[in-house]
Length: 127
Image 1 (cartoon, helix red, strand yellow):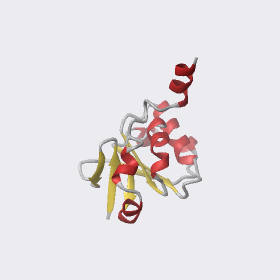
Image 2 (tube, helix red, strand yellow):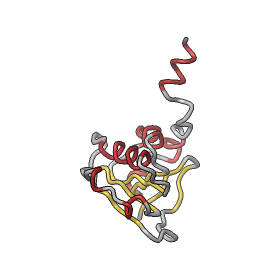
Image 3 (cartoon, helix red, strand yellow):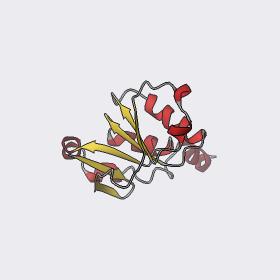
Image 4 (cartoon, one colour):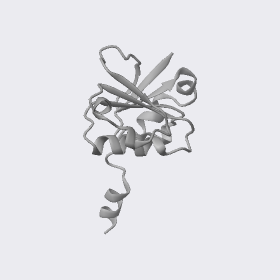
């Protein structure tokens, strides 16, 4: 069983309602993004390790190339990465029940105000 993490907390995970779902591995070559990929309803991008940032790059490139569907990060994503996940273009994170037991909804919600805590806004306040 998995849980979907959004800016409002934990929700049951369901892929129902998505006609075309694509799953990308962390090492996917962006040159393989085609019209079929960009027209998917949901793209899930795997994180093989919390130290592997390739998923962030894939999400950003998909958004820059016009993908307007839903993006989910899944795999080894931790609550400390939530703001970066959202800033790079993801809509939500799929986590396991085991991770949810270790990192509570409150841990994730503490980072849900991701737009207000970027380094650019902090620099503007100190200038």
